[in-house]
Picture 1: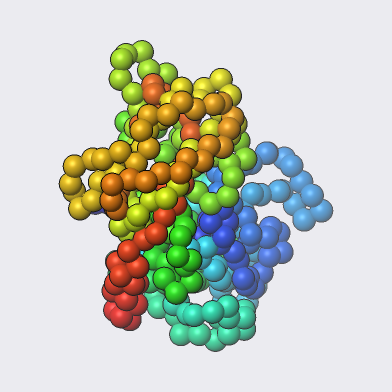
Picture 2 (picture 1 turned 180 degrees about the vertical axis):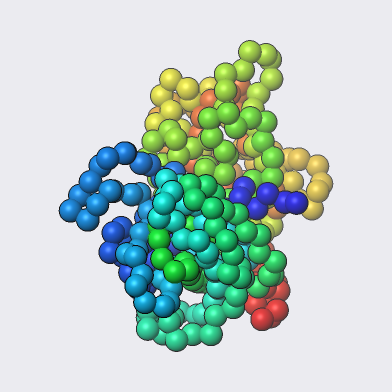
Length: 329
């Protein structure tokens, strides 16, 4: 079975996800559910409401019902699975949870979302405490929001919604980063991810530290490390950004970028170029033709904070992909 947890977290705060409604946040705010960092716990750390948890925790329910958090996905897309992580919640985790999804245009209010017709994607399912509870989703439709329901109450540390990004082409500019997770790009291979997954390079915004980039172990041979990325659509590339910010003693000495179209031969987009530590580099390029995947080679190893492949996409491909996942509703 495919490991859906390696796909981007569409709900992550790092991609713009947000909790737009929660019926109970007595102990801890539901905003914690979407934080990209792993949850933490300090035993016997109390505030005026009790033990402090890094997650969403509701009060003990004395009436029938359940607690709900509605999440706006940072990047709408096709959901392949959800991760309901109850880390550190041992005697106070929910015994059951369910997840519903919604596809809606624009920016609905919390009241409109509560009144909407939701699609079940994970039925009421048993949870274990202090662990990641993984549930695959088999629905090929594009969704914009999800609703986590816990039965009847309790605490959840993190809520991950893993899937494939499907952007709305009508909201995209003519030229943009086609290697971004938010555009629909995906990492399809790499030589080494000892310190971090290359998917981190495709994240939005600037890296805050080395942990938010891709870093390989130190090579002791004559080879070099690499990562392959499938772009969101065939693209005429105009600029390549190679950002080594925060990598000071461990930046690559040089890097190159090659492209390929429809499984054809690789061609140069950016021939091997020297890199400086802790520096955002931008290179104007004029490749021989469009590419739908790129290969970043770093020499010989090291860390990269961000990779941007900026160009003009084939909008027909973007529009067909969008329609395919919307017309199945």
